[in-house]
Amino acid sequence: MGAVRILVSNDDGIFSPGLQALAEVASEFAEVRIVAPDVEQSSMSHAITGTRPLSYRKTKIAAFEAYRVNGTPADCVALGISQLGPVDRVLSGVNLGHNIGHAIWHSGTVAAAKQAALLGVPAIAFSAPPWEEPMDFGPIKAGVNATLKSVLAGPPHPLLNVNFPAVPRGVRWTRQSFRHYDGRMVPGEDPSGRRHFWFTVVPIEQVEEGTDRWAVNQGYVSITPLRLDLTDERALQAAQRDSRPPA
Ligand code: MN
Image 1 (cartoon, rainbow, N blue to C red):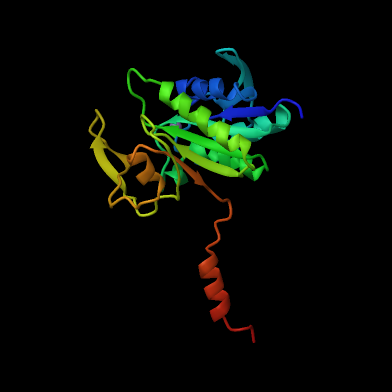
Image 2: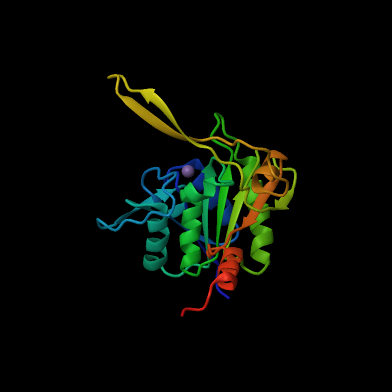
């Protein structure tokens, strides 16, 4: 088997220190290429660009071959896989801000990994606490290293969502926290007196044990296997059971 090839992307933009940290750890395991958005694309979820052409420019991130794309995280992964040759894994992040619970729906970080999974390439999304000055990437890089070591040794899971606490004290496999959501529109005013709004998401309920949010709150690295099939199996079975055959 030849060298493992890893494509690294993110949604914070190609110059994010989180992306460089991830590429540095990934390069201990594989040949790394970076394809990431030229500007920040956080909360873009799984948007793709269909109304204008995409292009990329070669650039350097530390010692890495890198390409910055005028598109979304999902665009970057699709373009990277199609134009730079096949890869064995896609890693996304490290996002500076957690992607747990319902934030997964909004996340561009998770969407980059999800795009890879849709194309049949196993992928992992990594997220850490929000940016702080000074930011210590030591514990995060150690966490990425430990995660990659264990995940790359096992059978490839199509899509994993990993969140780090500031200082990890262990690892927990978790489910997505479900009840925490309060998408609020907070009004404000611009300098000309015009009303504007910030869409903010505030956790509102008790943390459920065994979830991603619970693990990170307890100081554990959270690893959640995600799936691409959104079908509600129970509702489907109930509907099929209760429905009358067509007359
Ligand atoms: Mn982000």
